[in-house]
Length: 195
Image (cartoon, rainbow, N blue to C red):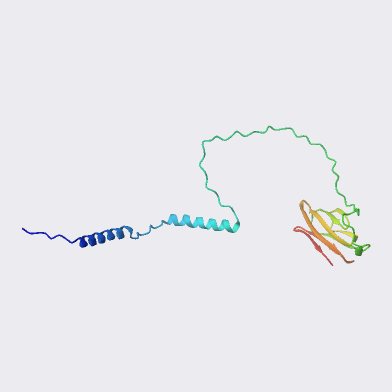
């Protein structure tokens, strides 16, 4: 009969440690990353481009749609038609009369008594309506090629103009010498030409 030798305790311990570490390393080994399908790549690219375009144009991104709830919508009030009566109005229509009445800003002393030619030049086929205010006040409506204000006082002016049904066009100009000053009306707007 053969007698079996007992393994020393150190060997058993070392073998069990090696076996345990081998199992742990095998379990924690890196796995192959999953491959993305072409549809997933395309979807990710579209989402990225949408976000970039939204940032460039400051457009909010669409929010995710929520599922409909079981809560019923509250009834909305329906308005019943009513009869509308229109009465004729006596709204005064502006005329080409020039009014050099009082203004909010007094004429600076260095400009007192000094005037210049202010020409309104119409380069459109539309009617021009303009209100000029500041040192003096003018309210003018004309359809010709030009309109002249022979003695516009020197000073600062603002204007509000309509070219046909387009407008309002607003701006500022200054008359500071005796030479001709021109407001030019074009289809694109109004410009001021100094001497």
